[in-house]
Length: 386
Image (tube, rainbow, N blue to C red; front, side):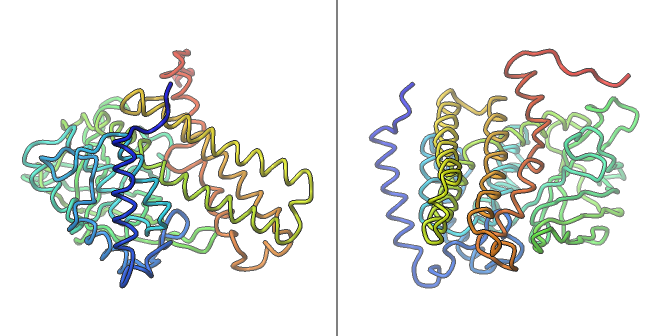
């Protein structure tokens, strides 16, 4: 398989690179490097939101969406190029990522025309931010075990329950939330995919302090929160299909930009090893070579997957690989720095601490293995409880 980019893709790369170099200046120069996994919380939120709206004004949000919905209809390889160049320029982490990367494509695929008219333009323009209401205390990787309920009351749904590990809920205007709307139905049925405003009575947001000391995740409590009856994506009691569509979009092209960030972290570790002499240790050198090899494997596998078309169950291989690889990189960073790595706010300590969660969030490794075995390799499914 030819994994090289075409001349058209490389021309697009130059366009993206020129735009970012020209615009990440002046008031936005300070935004470089702000945010990202493990450093979201409130890091530079105001300037990052201003940058998001600047991108929107120039037509650089939602580039993979069809043109009729405000996008550029960029090809998969062009989306890869954009995310790579965006990360290479150290542009700030996007504050509209849940709307652009997850909810928007889900509405395009499963929503009504009225929902597309109402919800897509504010995502493109970065005037409404979203968060994801999936995980619960007893329903994380076992998502079908969710307990949050929504009951119909006239022209509205009334939501009660709890979601947890809700990234960036403290910024969000809206949440796409999975609720059980038929408690008598089997586990994967009777679930609906609702769109609910966050800023209303009946919703309480409580930050969760992580091992790194940051608070980018939250608990969200619903106590009679309301949303219009028409804010159901897909069929009532048929939300599982839309929910799985959202997860497929989550494991698409966005990880290519993440890999550039990984390369930057790797370069910092190599630099630290050279400065303190750790690179003279043959074991450290071997681990650095393994880490570099992992970066190449990650990139080529992702390219191969996307060249076959829209991401399928094979995308779970990407998640399983990079999450385990990044955890090992965090451990390598600590070992290279030695005892100094244990001091408060030591370089790359935050990366080590946050990477402990890599094999859990966005789909635990155990779940990814099941998906790969059952849906990609065609192996028998594991026994279900009676």
